[in-house]
Length: 113
Image 1 (cartoon, one colour):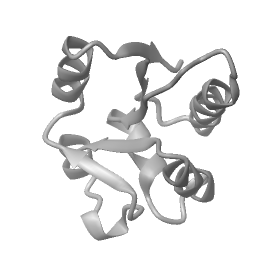
Image 2 (cartoon, one colour):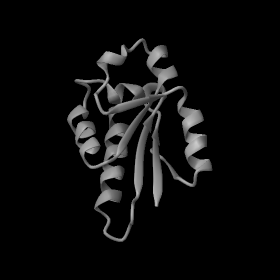
Image 3 (cartoon, rainbow, N blue to C red):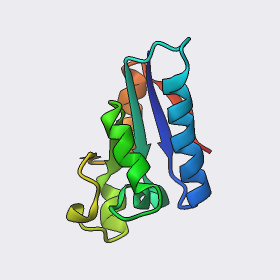
Image 4 (cartoon, rainbow, N blue to C red):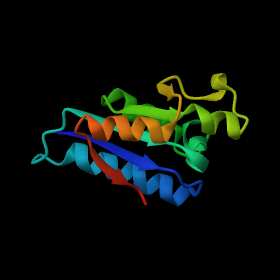
């Protein structure tokens, strides 16, 4: 299965919820996960900044094969330098565009929260 977790909230508790949901899926022995994506846009783009709360957990997700995808529009809108993002973060032109592409390609969509 392929799945995309979408987080757009700037609330750190929501980020924690999103990361835990990703981990729960990866640890579920009954789920055969081929590809997992954690996509952040809006206020959640801060989740991917180096030194942000949970930055070590986000780095850890990268080592499990989870792709961390950030919205370039959100990066620009929040005036974040690309160099300030974690090294395992891939930027896409727009988060919503990427979400629609992934869903069109058969990815399950999970909004957190």
